[in-house]
Image 1 (cartoon, rainbow, N blue to C red):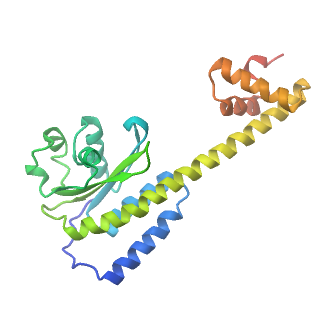
Image 2 (cartoon, rainbow, N blue to C red):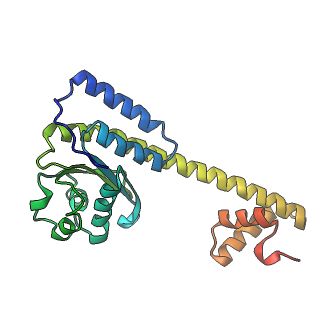
Image 3 (cartoon, helix red, strand yellow):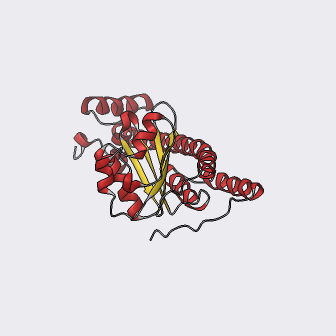
Length: 240
């Protein structure tokens, strides 16, 4: 449940510095992209000071990749932007600049999105774009249940947090890609061993057999290898 945040005094610089350092350390320790994004959303509430937050990642050509939110209502508000192709996140991404809404109820820029989130209970928000390289992007939305809540200090803290978030997400994606590549190579090696033993092939011949099957059947090499490991044979060679 999203509850209104109390009007807290501006944090001392030393406290804010420590909070951001702890947040950065937590982000960099996450094992994958989903965990990293989840940590960013949690910090969006804890450090920035909102009542709820959500973060959406977009892949190549703007394809939706992942949405994480601190509550069901925040997730619905975020997903409505994707479905309607309008809202604060698309605006922030297009302008490559933060978007502040002091009162969602009177916001004229996105009427369909405004109608879709009318019963969500949020009145103000801060949306910031997240730059993740040439092919990936995202947006963080921090929401308040009261109007006119986002202030300059919220924007400053959010920008600092997103600098760490961008680095952590890119690093997590790179690590995941590397792990997938290592796992795929391991599966290919196992599949080669199975084919070499079963059909009397050498290493070069077994790899060429896998590669040719992958090409002829338009199946990824790693998937072909995983199938061989699982069934102990190429699909069209079973039962021979």
